Image 1: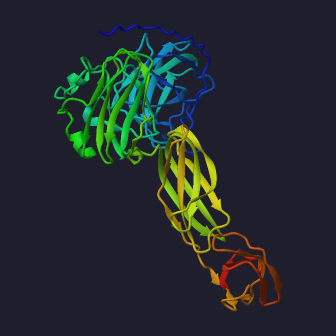
Image 2: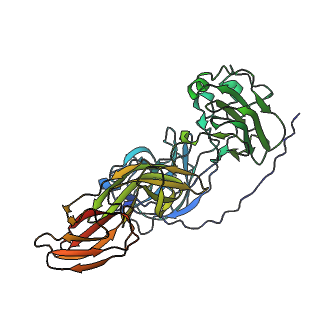
Image 3: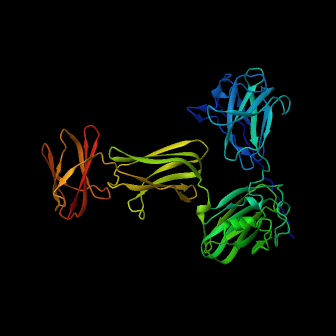
Length: 487
């Protein structure tokens, strides 16, 4: 029989006035300061002092409730479950009004407005159906005008995750642990999916469902770590993901399960094979709000990480050749725990080299733009990709793109092939700014050069053999290229 002991943690929060914005956006980006959506309401002090009443379209237009006055804005990110409760409390403002908005800068849509649903004549908004991870905006003002102080908070108590039923199971993989906030008061798995055989689990409170696909065979080990009592059951093997999900609500006896009083559990399934799929249920017996970590690691088997969605929503990834260099740009619509990007290239598709790195934006729903320049591109063109690295060290790759080195003008080189000494004919009217000789990997070669009005004589080191490329940049920024084979 299980015995459950509860501990009480009390947080003392000092209240200070939280900077807010008189406008929701600046330069096309959301600049309204964020409110943390907690499981309970923790009021933050705010003020409308110094604000003006802005009712133009870029600032939300005219709200649909309450007499308008000087307004201030906040933002928040919707959590899993898509619910939020926004509460206010009186300060020197005792009659406030509040609006809730969705959409991007310059295209805001009011989705709720309240005058006095909260205590006294203060507003309160309870909304559902929000998109998890989406940024929303809150607008507050004093009824009829005037300025003053107030309190505000955003909360989403006892949210139930989207994977609380087996039809919505989500993937986990080797080396990519998932940490989630378990729920209290959620529907038990035995109630939501009564057709499954739950084996040793006498109760199934606050469930979370996952699946894994085996990449390399061996012994599968999954660690489950929490602060208080958790349990699990695992089913399989299934031949593929579709079969595992289709069997939801008809799972037979699990192949491993635990109903102990421990806060740390370990799943063990021996001799799994590549391609097999397993379905994992984690239950929060403690029925308190707590963080639970699920990590497939420690065993000899590994699992398929390509099933996981990219933590970065990449909307633009492009490169082009400009005046002797390759320039790259990429844009993210959102980022989750993004530590940094590596820019990598290859000439043959097998050996990749890292050219440089750029810091990521961590976790954000704001649009971010990045750029990078390959100063020494391969003459024959190359393949490029981004390696995105999480804060925990996990990584994903972008699509691979090919950047062709445009031949603006051809240079004539003779003799071709050569023995290391050759001539380059300079086109009529061209005044050179710079010249370099590189090998097929873009590495600069030491070379001697003798120039006349219409020709260059190039002398390469005796030990060099292979293809030598000549790159000449004129005073107008035009690039000329030629090559010779050195025997």
